[in-house]
Length: 288
Ligand SMILES: [Zn+2]
Image (cartoon, rainbow, N blue to C red; front, side, top):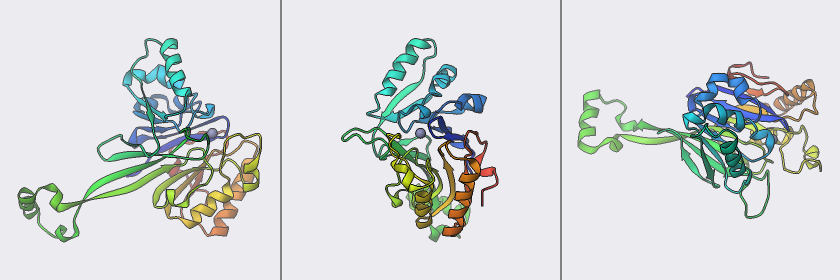
């Protein structure tokens, strides 16, 4: 499935990614509705990774405009901010009802369509022992695929076998990880995104040294660490975002190109420029 992904992601200010074909929004920082306009009405499922304000303030406007279309907002089960928001929205915009607020747990699997499932995975961005506060997400597509021994049969023969033995005799279920979204997180586990067709990963800082900055209370990734991981796993496309606005765009791009060359990265690499929304990210010219 070809995915049309729109997004904005600058650390501290706002992050959101909308996947048109799936009707799925990942995070809801400022500007979701202002950028997507009517397309935002097609959001059926909004997965919010954690309660940092740059990931949720777009929900106020989204709820006001589109609650009537009965979207579901999913959030980590121990993030107290979301029940507060629900309560506030209910009082602030009392006639805009319909939004479904759903807490989710680590390893929750949500079927958003017959063939599409979203898995929530706890990450180490917000660490509070025993409490689930921050999530990454993986999207899977399942398809029924004709077993190899039947591919050369004629249609009427297949129908006959199907009548005799049922659907599942003919097909295998093939499950693919079509998209993964790290959200805000340190690099923890290379296996997590191995075989993701598209990976959207944060790279708040350019170098690992900077990730220890005391003024950032929650943990983030750096560009050098992300590339080290990408060089060691199999993915088809990479989208980098959540860069800190402390960096000049030329500096970021120079570093990205340096890592692409160093690790001999062959897959297309896209990046969300600081302070800019990008339409159909994968249709843009990659940086390499
Ligand atoms: Zn953030």
